[in-house]
Image (cartoon, rainbow, N blue to C red):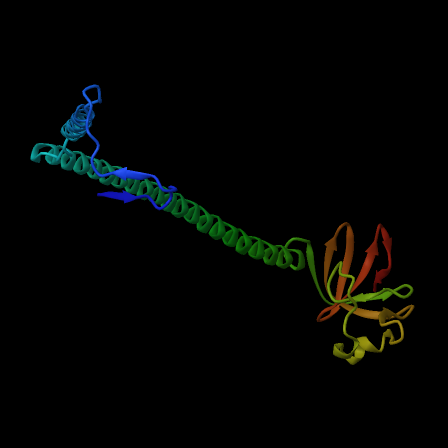
Length: 228
């Protein structure tokens, strides 16, 4: 029985074709293919065998790594401790310098204060000396002097400040001229005034005519007041 190929026009293909002696034995190729496949399988097994398994750290290796980590931590701790000591020493040094400077400043401030007090005391003593014992004073109670011209009446010997007219005795005030417009106080020409004490200041002679009231009796060798 033959099957007909629908794509061929009326050509019958026999079910069985008799083999000839010179036909090629296809089993040889089949065996070759099987051997090649076996070879590939062997090579794959070899590659799989060549792969080395992953190594695991031994306890000894873990101890070594742990020791290294501990050493590094100790080094860091010691470094931090040394750094802290250095900073602490620097801070102590700065505090010592601050204390020293503050002590010097306090000492200097006290010296300035002491000098200021001494200067104040010396000024007071100088003013006291200039108004009393530093110049020669001649007691002349109730000595009369006749004044020539208008001589200024000052609060103290050698002062430039005028005496207070309202605080003078009437007997003295009557011999003086009080110019309120110019705010000056002078003697009248020919006034007779009592002189209670005299004082030499800068080569000039002054006479006290009342409390806090002085006139110049002799100026640069010229007599402005004549003793009566």
